[in-house]
Every structure is written in C-alpha cells, then in structure tokens.
Amino acid sequence: MRGDSGQAFPIYIAVVAGLLFLAFAYFLVGQAAFTRSSAQTAADAAALAAAQDARDQLREGWLEVILAPEQWDEFLVGEAYDEAAACRRAAEFAALNGAALSGPCEFLDPTGFRVTVTTQNATASAEAVIESHCEFTAPEPSSEPTPAPTPSGEPEDDPIVGLVCGDDPWEIDPEDPTLPDAMDLFTVRLSE
Image (cartoon, rainbow, N blue to C red; front, side, top):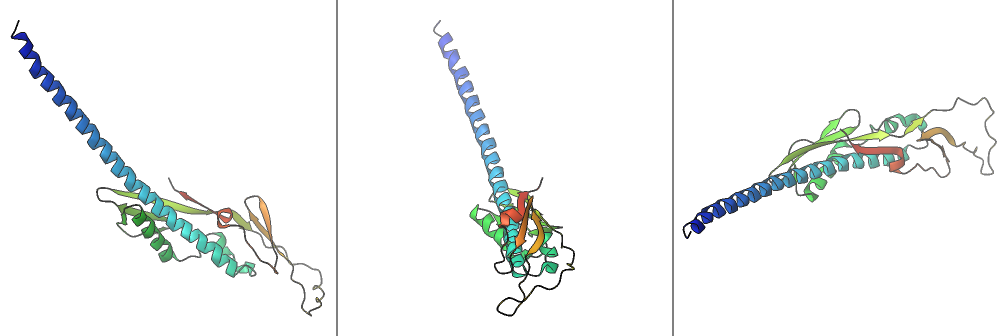
C-alpha cells in the first residue's frame, strides 16, 4: 500500500507540466494575435489619416474657387489635393500608434491611399478611399436681361445653384460663399 502513493507524484508532475505548457502556448498565441491586431490598427489609422487629410484639402481648395463653378470638377471627383501632404499625415498617425510606414504611401486611383506599416514584430496594410457625396449640374444660361445695377453701381450676382450633396441642394451666395462641412461633401472609409 505504501508504494502506491508514490506512483501518483510523477503523474501529478506530468499533468502540471502539461498545463503549464498549454498556458504558455495560449499566451504566445494571444501575444501574436495582439501584435497583429496592433499593427492592423496602426495601418488602418494611417490610411484613414491620409484620406481624411486629402478630404480636408479638397474642401479648402474648393472654397478658394467657390465662385467659379467651371473649376469645381476636380474637387467634386476628389482629385485636387497634395498627395505628399496626405502621406505625411499617414506617417504621423502610424507613429502615434507605435508603427512606421514600411513602404511608400501609395495613391490609389481614383481617390484613395494604401499604406503598409511595421511594428516591432508585425506588418500590416490598409486602404482608405474618399467618396464624394456631391454632384453639380450647371443651370442653363438664362435668357433674362442682366440684373439692374445695385446702388453701388455693380449688378447683383445671382446665387450659384445646381450643387446637390446627398439629397440636399446647396445654394452658394456670392456675398457669403460657404460649403457644407468636409464630412457632408465626402465620405472617408476603409476599403475591403
């Protein structure tokens, strides 16, 4: 009887060693998943930052030519921005998330960015795109006579109509020209 109690000890040691091995394996798998997830988060943030910077540039540039609707096309389709500035913003956001761009910040035609980032132990890529919410249809030329001069001696300018963002028509007042917010003009999202 006395010898039977000693036989359980090696089994106990084997079970404890097996459990420790499983715990260590789960720890490594979890750590790898966390590292991959962190790298993907950094890549997503960098790609979105580039696209959001481009979106903001589009709105600012559009405001500069707001009274010249014939120059709106490149802003409506999202093509009038400085790609290098947007990519610098991507690099800043990658760094804020503990990563660095590990290749070029690539411009995607027609409007988007692809970035690849590297953390200490992982690499991940992401793409973000800019989608316009707006359309512009220039009104037909009016056959009405030129407006009468104002007391200052200059004819009063008619508002610019024909811009629709989402389902909302926008009228641009030449005296106080404004545009919707950048988020109302364009959507920025991660692509599939």
